[in-house]
Image 1: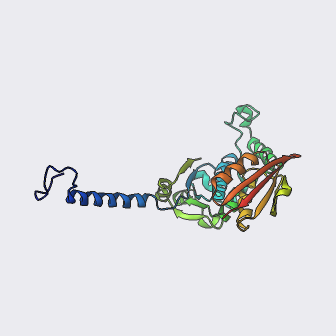
Image 2: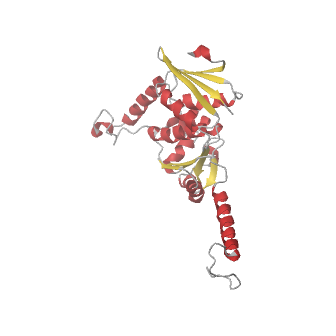
Image 3: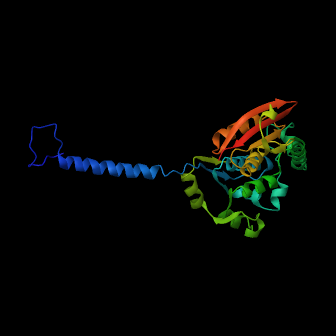
Length: 194
Length: 81
């Protein structure tokens, strides 16, 4: 920094008032921007993008969302493509398991592809869910909404799939798109694609 | 064990599995006043780790104790806020 011509030079213990003033201003500026960063709101945020509508893929987003809400987090689940079926009142009661392409199924793919196999696999899974005391999809949706989770249904895919906004559970947010999801994702501590 | 706490409310989530023990604990503790203790009875073995993790990550609650007896996991959670 330049020194003022009126300031006696050579005396290094006397600070230059202009320099001190500049430093003070800089400190104020930095303190202000620090205060902006730490606005006292340390609520965590999570955004999940849910794209699959099979029974097994419906659970993880809803379990994580309802649990995060119990932590007091601010949660958005953005449902798009087949993920919409989870929020669809009629279809969510009838989500299916695919027997094909699942190496954990106790049958070869050639058998799994036979008619009725998906229905059978789904029935077996539903029985297990019952026996285990695992919550139903409907219960998890109710619980999530009750706790303030924002369940969003992508407008573009609602139109694409010929669904109607009234097809979804009360409390589901419609009329939202990628930009809305991205906005919440950018502010989120946790972002997941399921 | 349980008798050492003055229990304001008991939540029975026996037979229910993840995420119900945590979510219902959260809902039940919200109804308690500061200083009151909630007793949670669960059969989900995952509830030992889950309720501990939830209590550590959630402001306003304190996990006092977790006890396993006769296949029932008992959790004692205090509302602190």
